[in-house]
Length: 391
Image 1: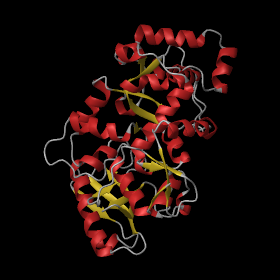
Image 2 (image 1 turned 180 degrees about the vertical axis):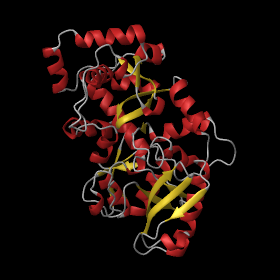
Image 3 (image 1 turned 90 degrees about the vertical axis):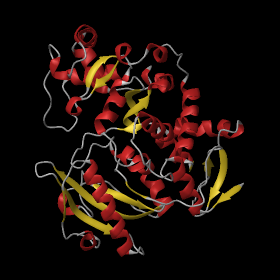
């Protein structure tokens, strides 16, 4: 069996994610966006906007400065992407719609939906009818949206549950997201017909393809790494790996220091070295699976949004900093939109790094991201061992 050193595994991972290439020097357009999505497979969405919308950052990390309105038009108006539950809520190429029919066709359950069907017969059908007649619409646009349960984080109203269930079934999708509010419309009015008419696959075949796609986007990973990428449950994924190895879609390897077998994609590229820098959103596909991040870089990372403030170690919205193929620091960022300032609430170096160089490179990246976001000032709080090197 082929054996890989940990440095090789890192370089495979970064090349697969498009983080080993130099950023383009000219104007960034849809061709560049397509290339990023071709590499990473899908883009995660998240509502937190304390620094920047999550789906903007993976493109900046790989491309540098670009026009966000151009990206929005491509994501929501080109017909090339659609929203679905891929890796959490995600934007996925519409050409891959057929790979998700197994999930749309009932491979999920939700107690709230069963409750609505039992207590409000015909309500689901009525909601779909309203979307058909009046869409795109949001939950509050329904004739009878119901009341939200304010005592629970996910205490959705019956209208929101109905729309989300129709979304899960693939009958409706998001046409656009003004202020990040999902506007629901019939899938046939959003997704080009050629993609909807492509025959779907049975669960096992679709999941096998998705596992191979995950390997292509990760370069190298364990079975759990690959399964997590598209949120495939391990009991369903585990039996599929033998077939993927037998047909050459995956190559079994051993990675130095890993206590479990791994798989290499046959098209994975191994650059001689990785140079450059990037801030990584907590929702960047390189670092989705925190266990893999720790195995690859010995970098323990947890998002602390839901941790009470007194118990946070590094901050509310912390971005890892990648420099020349290594995760060398982390920085807690917030955007003050009223004063057009980037607030650096904390900056922390990893053990053993050259703090002078890391601080200098991080300052350069913070200046670049501030310019991209239209901010005119960077304010650094005296929190963390890199803070004084950023002022």
